[in-house]
Image (cartoon, rainbow, N blue to C red; front, side, top):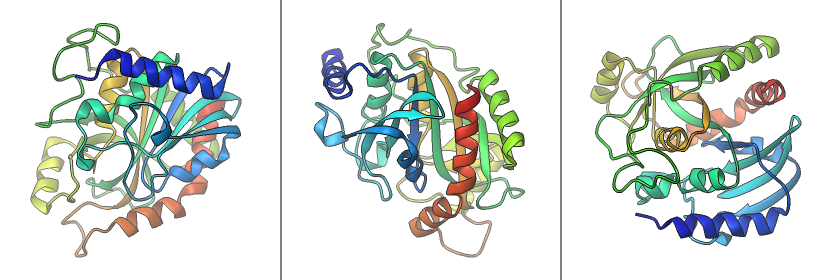
Length: 273
């Protein structure tokens, strides 16, 4: 269990870097989506390695830093890159940044990811609003002793992805002309891509998207009382749907190609929050 003092020391260091700036919204940007963080106005950059006790991001396309500033008039803390379990970290370590942001006063988290489309009606480049998720066997960030300073021992997870924020997102998508699916995200720990049999099982279970992140962060955010809004960018069709191998290059290329529509949607959501 990570000592509470470590979270406090990380939060204290960030306060020393950002002065009186008070972030309202945490944004976690997934693979291929990190360029959205470059839109932050009056940015303050804080690389993860400079923060006491903070874990380092090693995934391709992840810059591994916080960007503090304003976007669409909102005070944001943007994570350009996240921590994954497949990098060798525990679930608790993977959500360390979420809990540090809670100590800084953040009340809402917008989490994004690049993922494979399980739903055969979806197309690469489309964005899915996450309505719910599936986590079967991996441990969660709540495993082990509970720290009541973050949340209760047995938190309700029936509405992890805040319904009011999802409605706001759907309205924003219509206003800016961005097609938005809505569906269920299934978590696989990776780093290997899923097998065709696993994707068939995911589809039977009701999943529309599959990926290697987001779920631990969403659980931790709800545990500590944050409102949560989640998005998946379909960078490819999931394993077994098309007769071609899955590659990380495809993920990054699709993220780059969709940066304009993704950015337009995110900015409108922030404006209306």
